[in-house]
Image (tube, rainbow, N blue to C red; front, side, top):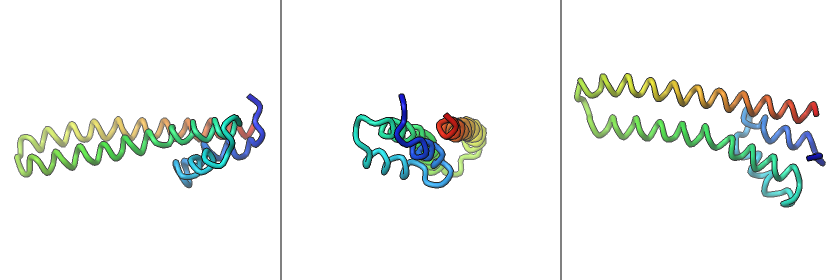
Length: 111
């Protein structure tokens, strides 16, 4: 796949650092359907949404469980361990996807 605009393609991925999911979505909307820029912007948009959805899901789960069970000491202790484990997994996935986006963007710049 030869790209018409490698800078735009690479920025779609690297935008996770400065405008996650907004920049690739705008590029995806403004590029014609059969270009590589359209493909890369759509792919970057999906890759940027995964950490967002996971982080929002984590906040909803922890918040709703905390509200549902109030000050129950034994449950709150187990919730704390489970929440920390879930938080660790979400942070790891967010970090891996962030690094992947930056790596792939730089790879497109250099190709």
